[in-house]
Image 1 (tube, rainbow, N blue to C red):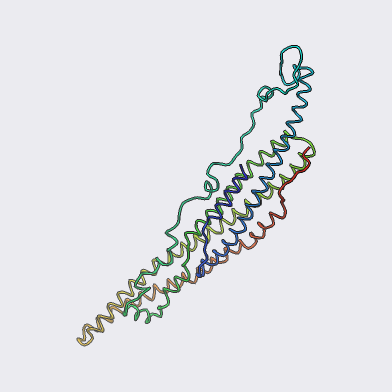
Image 2: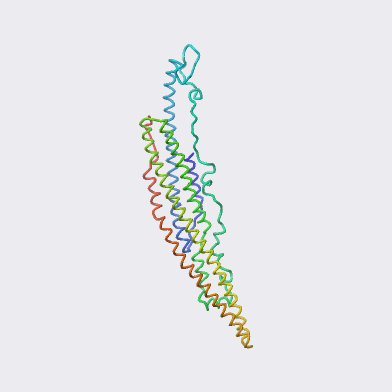
Length: 348
């Protein structure tokens, strides 16, 4: 069951869309996500093989044990039908067969297994498609394609490159990145669920199964459980990093949106007033009124432009958050080298 769970995690990651894009804040996190996604696909592929191999070997051990049990039980039963676990046969002549398992034990076996739904149960927290247009939505259309007087006012303010600067900072598919943050956090929860159930199953097997093969298997499973524990902690931390980074960028976008639209309103008023002033300057009064209104609006636009620039400068402080991901890919790559797929040729 948990081999299938590992396969579902690998499939979920394979189908996840992460694309790079030439935007400063986005490309930093996208490159990290692409690298970690690739490493995790390999990691879960190896984990699937490990769990499949362990299941195959344990089934073989169980089959061997059952055959031994049947032979011993048949021998006891043939000698004295009353001896074996309360099994009573008809008097006179025991049988060379083991009694049915439901006659021989009252044990209630524990039940283990992952929740239904595979990786989606942990990772699918909904869509964030609206965030994929976040950068474009920050720029009013008349700033992207300014009219003559708007372009003139932007030139007065030294802000003709502002739309490009905002797009370079906030462009990218942030909805995909938010979903990736959910995926990493969800995979940490998936591994934690897997580790908890496997630890319980391994402990139960340790009580029920004795001998050299059991000792070897217990040592192997101890390594597996430690690897799962380390991976859970690493992915939980990585999920926090991705989530904090995306949240920081989104909050900065919300902050800058208010400043941009305030700036835009002031630019429109200044452009309209300047156009009115130029068109009526020959009357005297119109020109004075027009440029006076434009001047006040320009002062307000400059204030809002300063607010925009502050946000654009401060967002670089988020970049250091990603430093915590530097060693994760290497740690995941070590998993395959340190935990081989089990192959217990001697099981008895």
